[in-house]
Image (cartoon, rainbow, N blue to C red; front, side, top):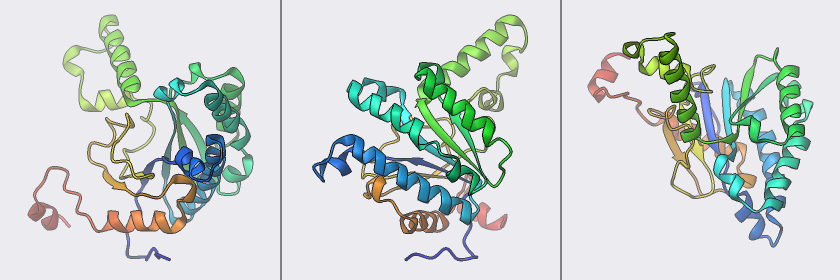
Length: 245
């Protein structure tokens, strides 16, 4: 098992594209919904391990706006799974605050109610924040931010000359947390799939073939080890980064 040493830097914010649930189930001659159920178990163990390691924010891509185009039976199963998986134990046992980003108005009312109830119940937890991207896409988020900024300019609340990267970030649904340090995608695909496009401008990307239901603490450690073996330059030269250490 890959061990995390005290010398390694733990990312403050890890974002994950949890891919491969359906393929994992299909390879076992099971319905796709079974893969999503097993994916919840992976969420539980990775949440617990991230909390133990000292990660402050864990953002999970759970359901994209494009996923509404999936078969109705699968969408219904996913919505039902959201309701049953929001258990107090995973949050209260690990002192985890729960947040949601995405177009919640598109979700069934009972799902909206459960999400808000969980957010309120865990609001005082402060060891880690788990953020679920639900009915979310980055293009939707950026479009909504542009609308809000345009409206504020029209109302005279802000001037066009005051629009900056910082102002755009403030209008994102993720404005309560830092940008991801590390983005992990499971399942073998090498794409971002409309996820946190603004926020991952300088994130380190890590792709692995493991399907999400099989993603273990050891897999997480390997991703963090890879992150630690990289030099984050943010546009600077290698020499500049070394000089500022």
